[in-house]
Amino acid sequence: ECAWIKNGKRCGQPLSDDARKLGMHLGDSHGIQGNDKKLVTCLWEGCNRKLQRGALARHIRSRHFKTRWACSHCLKTYSRRDAMNKHAKGCQAGEA
Image 1 (spheres, rainbow, N blue to C red):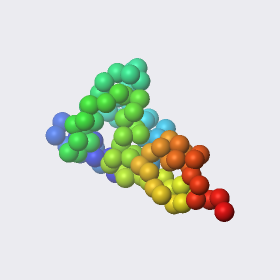
Image 2: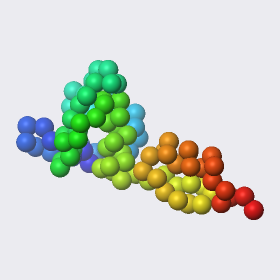
Image 3: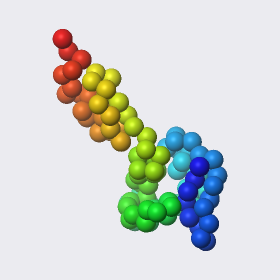
Image 4: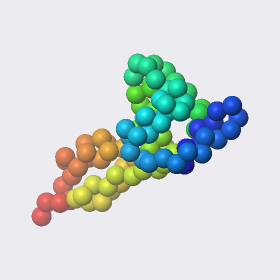
């Protein structure tokens, strides 16, 4: 559920953790559009973090949805898929 605060109220729309759908919701419902490098403030309930617009959906998925990615070799988990992929490339746990 979207916890974006607008005009003092929580959005409340059902959300998926799919980055594309989340990005569309942020643009359509909350006016988060423009250049990926543009600084925006995350207005998710209790956040107010400033970050680049292009990183907002990733931030919400990792910080607020608490999405985790597990290495298939050692099952260590990461909040970001790119960090897990970087780890997995050098993970020795899967080799016997």
